[in-house]
Image 1 (cartoon, helix red, strand yellow):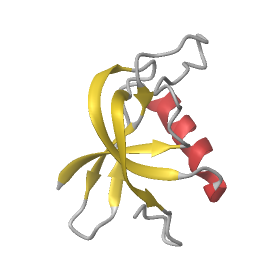
Image 2 (cartoon, rainbow, N blue to C red):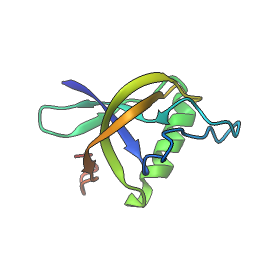
Image 3 (tube, rainbow, N blue to C red):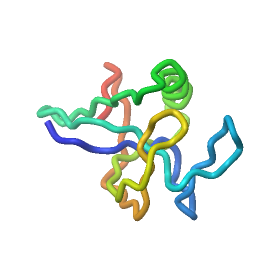
Image 4 (cartoon, helix red, strand yellow):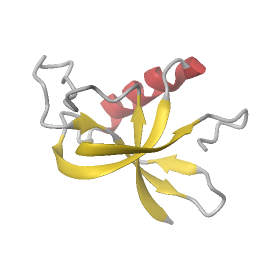
Length: 104
């Protein structure tokens, strides 16, 4: 298994995500930590604030209404719900959710 990052929604032009609880911009773009499985699927890992993170993740993934990307970049901090913050982001590929609920 290999570590990776998932970004739901487009990357902000300034690479700064806004913390919606505080209204303050964070020091990088919020991403979800993930693990690439041997079968090519990706497992998203929840950060420390799991209840808030699970709700946010569920809201973002419902209905495939936002683009989902596998990305890489430089970790520059931790966001308000414990998620990694990245700068110098490169999109590896766009991901889709399969009928079985797998991310690949």
